Figure 1 (cartoon, rainbow, N blue to C red):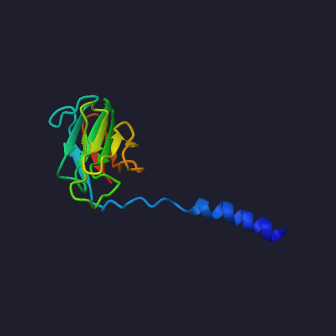
Figure 2: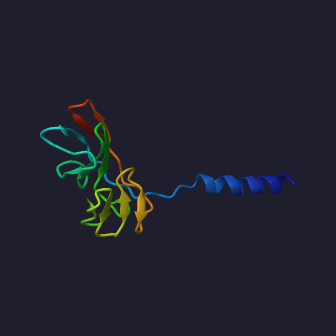
Figure 3: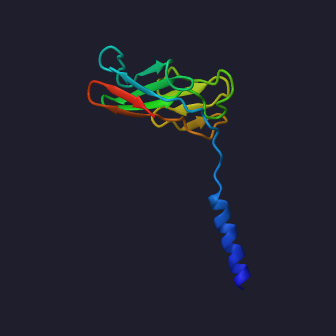
Length: 136
């Protein structure tokens, strides 16, 4: 009886410990400042690409006046693939990668179409009403 209970427990616990291995996007130190209300203007519902930071660049999406979403532009499905970079779609609420054909929602970075089961990598940010600080 003990062996049966132990076997059942192992069958329930061991698969729960396994995680789907997400491809690793190479780490790049990020610490930049922007002025989204003036020099680096980003309207509410708008976006801005930063090509000089991150692994393949950064996309900043401004949800509300004081709420931003900051993502790595490298597609998380296959980060080593040359040219795998997300671009914001015409709707300005989604973005997609033309190489792997994955599509993501800009509100939270989650995938909604294509082969990627992974969300976009996010960067931390803080905003004091004037300066948007992006870092990792």
